[in-house]
Length: 318
Image 1 (cartoon, rainbow, N blue to C red):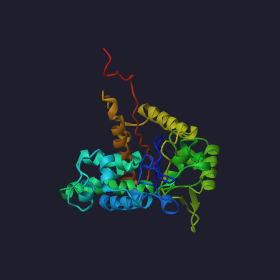
Image 2 (cartoon, rainbow, N blue to C red):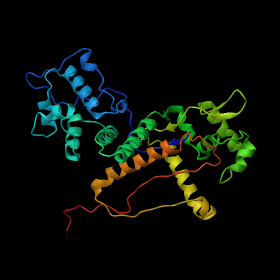
Image 3 (tube, rainbow, N blue to C red):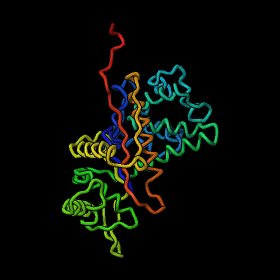
Image 4 (cartoon, one colour):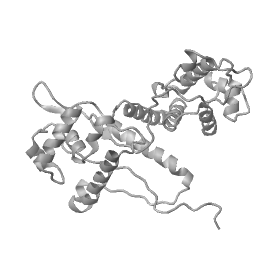
């Protein structure tokens, strides 16, 4: 099982959704009690965006009995108050422009909005090929969100690059939980003491366990960090892996490594889109390579990162 480390916005919503409406207008008084505290439907539990919308409207009606399609259309900057109803009934599809309008009215978090767009692509795909591609992305996102979150004491897992490497190594059939052997197998080499410490951390966190046959195996499933996880442990993890990447350019044979890079001038407004593209790639990698049935023999590190090389130029600068 693999793990992924993000320095991005956390996907999970652990508190009730903030009220998406402004102060109640006359005749639109919000209800109190149980209905007022009902949680918003979790979009990640849906595979049909129309079913999600229907549940979302039902939730809003619980909180605001006067809430209507007209109100939704107004918040979405749409001129036709009947459009939401037609979309729910399957009489109209969402276009890219109307999808963005709906997202404005729904007031979803960025990761939720991304998944809503994926569901629209899945439900409205016009060819089997497009539907298969959309389904692969939706499935990858669902799998990613089901992974175990690294937080609290678990951040010890990120303190040294070789700790996650050893956990991944445990997925290989010929893995041996022996410090001296592990020290001789990692690239670059570590000491037996470091390997022993890493094993202690992994067992203590429940990321490795000993099976009935005495063999040490992975435990805890796939691992991810919360998005926007900017702890020093996560920063240290990325620094360590990037140092390994720099070293690999000179000490790893070309047949065993692959480096790609693109230097491009882009509109600053496209940076969130670029981040979203990398999110999708990462989720697809996890879906494709995590839990392979074939015997595994080697641990690889896959990095995805973007960063600016210049300061942005304001459009109105001379």
